[in-house]
Image (cartoon, rainbow, N blue to C red):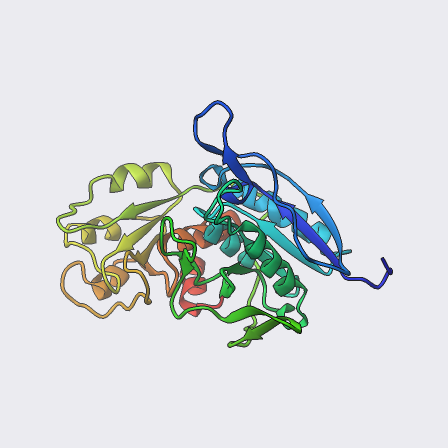
Length: 322
């Protein structure tokens, strides 16, 4: 292969795309990484920093992955990461926050395992590689490719537990890859935006998530705040809570971020009743902009690990540039 051939780093981390039924009958487990099919004229190097089901992936694993990608970027043109789907969106967003946008990184996985006739792993993997190597992908930061759709790491989310087209996220894909007789056709519907990166030396803070519901009186709030350095609350609607939470947030000296438990949409602190978003923000709560709770948690974790105080955290979330 000529020295001018593009170089692709393929990083395997486990997940359903690497899973098969266990010989001992205990169910599906990650075993063998998938092979990359049908990609000619590309020098592929494979790496496997860990082999885990994605519920076992922690921010420490995400940081390890970010460090590996940073090292590989020096002598590779693009990077593809195979990952379990349950926390794929969190790893994608963590990489988005930590890696320069210039590094083309694409994450993918599968909803079917390797011994099923409908295994979607090879097709997703080939799509991801072709998207990663597309010149138009450079400068967009980490992306997720699934079922031919290309998603931004900031807004992608898993929207179905078992369907093959399991990923979505408002306002939808930012691009699409289709296979034609002339070869893969990659089209983008959006332009990349400038953004900062957040790279702490360690992840030495703890952030927890609480979920709001009708009739919640703050059960678990004090306990979570006592062991965490910050909280994210998946609040109601545009960022509202039952009235009992207002004095609790007002008394907190740690950052409390309001995301929404609703599928999509930003936090808009407009309601002035007790527990309404406007009263919560006046009491010290921090709106999460358009981020869902688990992505807001990762951003808050990185900011606190960088040593930022509550008002600096508020400024980053308020600017919404991430």
